[in-house]
View 1 (cartoon, one colour):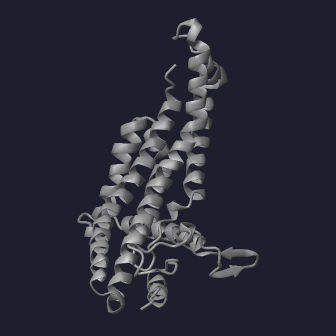
View 2 (spheres, one colour):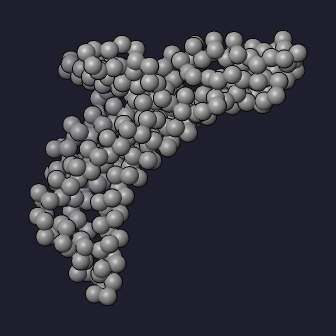
Length: 286
């Protein structure tokens, strides 16, 4: 009996808002689209305003922004002696970013100045990452390279402006490309390494680290859970082979829990490194 599982695949794809290609449940051991870009690229607009098209990705970016504004507003609007559980959680998260990242990394003198940016960055990334495991969303907006790249460039621009404003061109740039603390024969080499690593590689690695982790997690979670559902739903056609679906679904649930940790950790790491880069501009090594 020939079965491709096309109908089941389509229904699962609609349910999880995922692009799942036809799956040969008899010949394959896992269901995967012919092009994995289908899991990340959403070119069909949901609606348009003037000439601006709101694709699913654009809509989720605005949704993440509104969620962050909402939780900050409702979490901080009332200053009560005994806060609610939600307000207590918000105060704890804000205190964590303020004390452990802003003041803890940049320092108490300058940390408060950069707290609004770091706080906005942390919450936006946290919400955007958690979209991966949000029912009926199942898509982290940070798995599109444009968003991590943009945020990394913003951090990089702040890093450059702070460095030049605080230290001046000569001390910040000239002393970097010609470090006097290094033996003269090696200064040119160390200078090239510093310029490339600080001014070029930092924003790239900052963006790629977040992007790669979220892409990998979204890909694994999607393939495992969707494959599990499709194989189990095709038990009438493939019989005992449907047990593979149970295995994939269990693995998917394990990945689901793991991705929760990854989503939180990646938001923290991106924010922490942004604070580190700002701190190195305020107090350059050379």
